[in-house]
Image 1 (cartoon, helix red, strand yellow):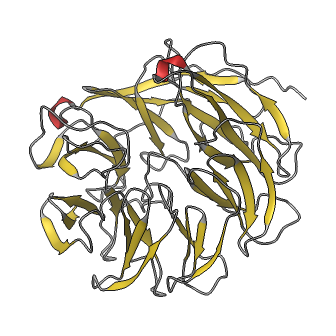
Image 2 (cartoon, rainbow, N blue to C red; image 1 turned 30 degrees about the vertical axis):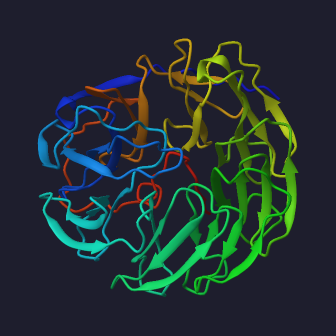
Length: 422
């Protein structure tokens, strides 16, 4: 079945000068001021490390509103920052429940809670271990009314769980992958943690591990993939793409890709039951990214390949994610940040049709910036952020109450995972 989708030319809503943030920044979205709009937080990583093995810390952070006004800056941007080869230890989240978002980050081997409105430090804590700063995972391990616990990790081997009093709850060593995903699978009010290939309960006890998988878990998604199932399942992208139930039973594995570093879940096809899984078939030739290419594939809920892109252009390390509500279509789309041979960021539907191609190259984020009910896409380079939408949206609208931070926006990672919930 090949359904024709109307192509939408993206509408440029705003250009924002982000030059004052410095080079090699990653953008985070969150309502820092409490006016009901998402602000832009540009985060620069430290340099002088090999981030394949040593985790980043934050060198500087610079906050802008949607008018482009500089709200605050913490740290001094470096002229020799690190690169975007791994996660940065930063999240935006209301960790203390005061209805205003804090910025959580690690600078100078210290965990900081920062007032999102002013950039002032509210609290600071020592790290539980020297290398415990690869990323920040916010979880509910202790049964609070909302997630207030923190999981820290090193690059690949160990993680530390701490409560909101910064007391160590437990630590775990294993093949924990890039970004463990916390979710309450058994509805007991506490999160379990899919840490790479290891499934851990809220007390830090290892319940089961994935079998016969190589390398490490790059990406983890949670959702009711198979329509006949009443419980949430786990999709892991890594050396292959696999589906597990949360009790540790493998349901299927897709071995038709070289490496599926990025996968995403969505309702991409109307005629198919359950959810579909988009992923990437990675082919790396030689030592340079430009020597290879990757193509998007789509699987049905039982792991059967629906289609695979035969990519003609060179370029490796595409990042894909599920985007909701880009236009009036009630189906989800695949948002692909593509690299190589002037292939610009593109939105695809579940039938491999191009919905939108953006006219600028760069990194991207997306979100509903003003509570319009539609998603906007921001593409940014070293100096400028370009805000696009499928139709006009007034970015000046303020609701003067904090826009609640979604889990997707407080679980930011270079290796996008997520939840697809009813």
